[in-house]
Image (cartoon, rainbow, N blue to C red; front, side, top):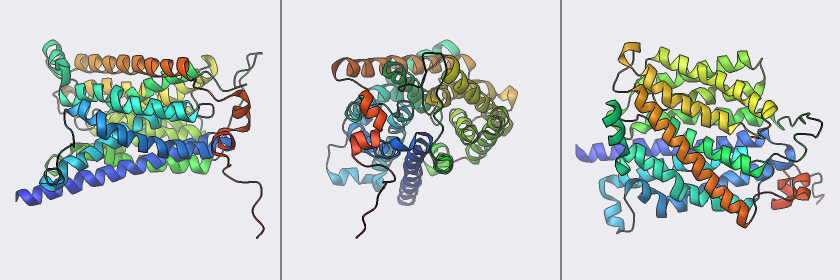
Length: 400
């Protein structure tokens, strides 16, 4: 019986890891479709190499920081229980690697390649795992402190705050330190339009993320006996709510339409296991509104050049998800209970503070020591030619 359970659990979480791994292709295509054509190759390469760097950083450092475990033992010991701990590492790695994938969208089109890889290693190896361990492993006694104050621990089932808000607020720090793209905001106060280069690729990325998200949320149970259809349907309802509200407020703009479901899914991660589906619908719909309104304010009024809107999408919708879990998870509102609004506010605020401070520290140090931006000439010709020496669609093909 134990053998069957161990094997089933290992397969379950492995399938989740594969689904979330596929989401990284979604990050790549979402960025590819949003940036200008001269930066499409760079978008693809960044996400691929960032994942590889994340794997090394999380294997050697990050996983140990978060969970106090390492893999420097014999392969026979690692294979125990059908290698469950190894595939659990794989699953949680795909979450950790989402941090640089999120940041990548905000700093697109003008960031240097090398410094971003260094930032990825530090963020995945040291910054992100600290809060991950606090929220999901009880490190530093902070969960106990929150429970002593409010009567409940901070609840984040699948990472609205731990992954998305943390990634989004690190992204905001990086965007502020990097500065806007050249000529994005003109001296006369006008905003230069940079429309998406490919709506079909943008849509493909959004769909890949949406489908993979059900592995992100449902498989966060981590064992078969804890799987819940409630998580799946809540994710579905939040996705639908985010899509419809973003479509309505965004006036059918395809960029808003395809980011709407992502906003809803970001927000539902935290409380997907405790909310009623109607609460999930409201949570997702609110997130769709947050994204459209805050993306517009960020770009046009505050002139913060966050290319894919990673701060409103992940930073703000993730924070809303953390708070919403403490509201719609209450039994009085049809939820399963066991949550407290005060605990959710404290945990969310701690995640935001740690992420923004960590982002300022990492990217500030890199800017001071080696620089973050491409030269003005390289930015003009595009990161594809400047960094990778080839464009997405070469002008000429060989005639032989």
